[in-house]
Image 1 (cartoon, rainbow, N blue to C red):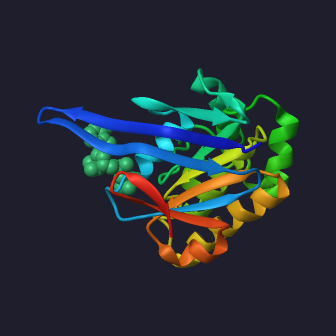
Image 2: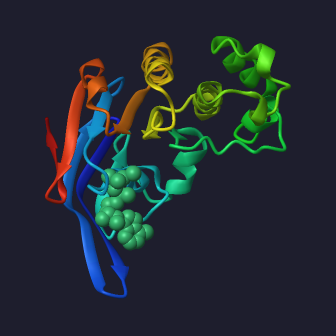
Length: 211
Ligand code: ADP
Ligand code: MG
C-alpha cells in the first residue's frame, strides 16, 4: 500500500479579479521510504501543492489517501504523521532550542534522542539568535521529526542558506529519511539536488509531471 495518494485534486484561489486555478485534477502517488523532489519556477504552485498535502490548506475537489485511508481530519495527521519544514525557520525567539522542539512533543526522552542524533545536544539551552541559519534549519529538521512522522514535507528549506549549508540540510533530510523510514517531498528551485532523489516532478499547466 502506498503512503500517500492524491486523486484528482484541484485548487483555485479566489480574488477580486476572479478565480485563479493553480492545480487541476492532479494525481500523485508516494511510496513508503520514497524521496521526491518537486522542482519548478516561482509561482508554479509548489507551495500550494505542499500545503494541500500537509493540510495547511483545503482542497476544492479530489481526495487524499494516507496509508490507504481517506483523509478527513487533516489536523490529526499534522500532529504525528506529517512533519513540515518551511523556507524560514519559524523558531520562537523567546524559547531555547529544547523548548522550541517541545512545542511539538512533550516526550523529553524523544527530544533528547533527536538532539543527540542531530549532534545538537550542546545547543539545547541556546536561543535561536545564537545559532547560524544552517544550525537553525537543523533544529527545524529535528523538530519536524521528533514525533517519528511517516512523511516529511519541506518547502524550499534551503533558500536562505549558502550552497554548502543547503547541501548539508538536504543530506540531513535524506539521511534521516533512511534512518527513520520516512518518505519526503522537498520543493526547491535549485535543480542541482535532483539526482539525490528517487523521483523528481515539476508542476506544469496546473498538473504534475515526472522530469
Ligand atoms: P510556488 O511555491 O511554486 O512559488 P505558489 O504555490 O506559492 O507557487 O503559488 C502558485 C500561484 O498561486 C501563484 O500564481 C500565486 O500568486 C498564487 N497564490 C498562492 N497563494 C495564493 C493565495 N493565498 N491567494 C491567491 N493566490 C495565491
Ligand atoms: Mg513556494
